[in-house]
Image (tube, rainbow, N blue to C red; front, side):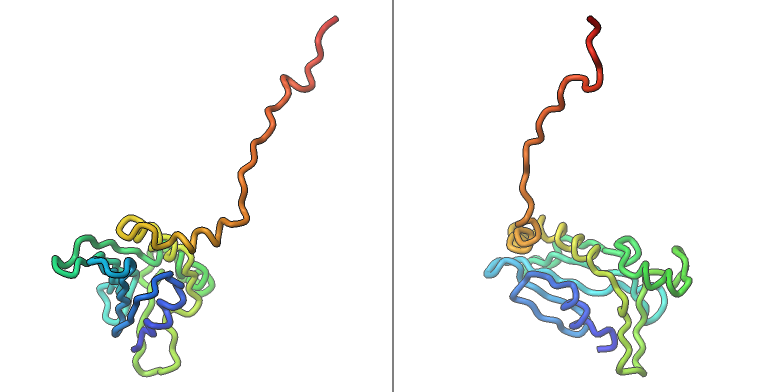
Length: 163
């Protein structure tokens, strides 16, 4: 696996328990026992062995693909820091892409990726097709937040009445 897909998808920390990575594709059953599946794979650019995003598909086990969306690495700032450090500007053919190198077994094509933007986009997508699958994850993030009612400001502070 030249893309090291298993490690990349582990880095995303998706909350699904019934999953498998086959080749460079991630498969999940976000709702156990349900007919819908999630498939995530890398989207190719027009150059060989170069990828610029993820393709998410909601698949019905009998009817096939129901919905497909593409999440571009550049749109989610996945490699912005890495590319800025390398001097690769936006709209350059290498910006926001990863390349697979089959000759180097230690090569990690997505090294330096910031996956928070991708993870949030995947969360938004799957919350539509698989409601409730991110509930536990969301509760952990917002557990410390509380809402307070702010007191109303006093009427025109700093203005004195004439006598």
